Length: 414
Image 1 (cartoon, rainbow, N blue to C red):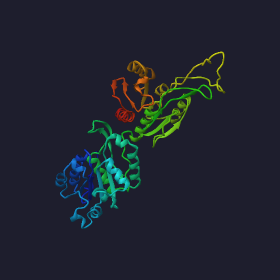
Image 2: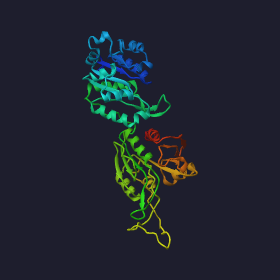
Image 3: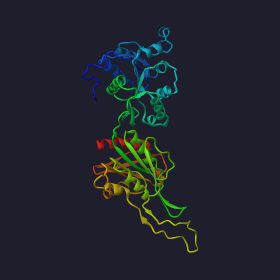
Image 4: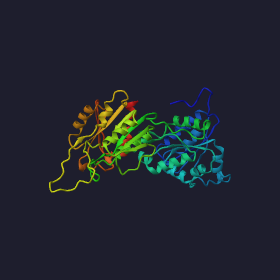
């Protein structure tokens, strides 16, 4: 972590920070943030929401800041001088830490139903927020929309980070550490009106993902295909983008919207998918999550009719092996090649064999028996097969699997 203090001395000395503490378990970090700011001779005033008082006390915040803590919009003493206006006007920067999903939503809607939101609405100064919430709340489309709107309004954002959470889950949603927020405050006070988006663990990398099934035509009406919905592959592409990567998604026919922030190429057959993958290379990480049909036929020009001679005989032709083709490349091979193994029996043994035969670095194996509900469902249970061993994850949402997989891959590529 870079120190906010540079050779020029203490860039925060005399800066006036209005810190708004939201109601979340991460509020305890706000106390350390006050201490870090005061160490750098910043002047800190604190506004606490009613929910924040369930996690930290006004007395603790007041002792650390050396000033009163403001809580009540209708304080007669302060409001005789329009206290919420003065608080905003007197600050050089407003910082919201933690910025909960609820507080972010209220900011987006322009509500002013307590002192915190009223001060935020009444200001003409820069606002920096440090989001903190459960990973599912962070990944929810409503939260993503709210953040995009706030960024469009000029609100600056620092974090959140990946990590273990108080709820027992792991993923994005941990509030940035106090020193990270201090650095963002220095940048906000000395830099342009908008901070760059925080760098994720996969920033600067190109991640190439395949997703969904392939459809191999028999005739203009019928096809050979797999049951994949594409949910897992699309979730992986989205998680990679949220981790900072430049993402290319090659998708077979699915009934899913394209993930935002991702370059998507739509294909239908295995040969089209292979061509799209080769065109998208080079990549740092290749993740073959698509359920590619192993065989195809030479399709008829017209619909095949029933005949007294019985059903037609289909001469199957083996499709190209996209995973093996990429994994066995010499020059230009991705640093990390990840395959998927959809099995109905001997899941781990078959996945180990696939790891060896395809020459990839990691296999994500799962049981796709009909009773599992994996195909078309929203949950999955996977085994991660590497030369070093097997790591088994419990049943969880496919979005969470994607998030945890990105955290693992970022550690591997280092």
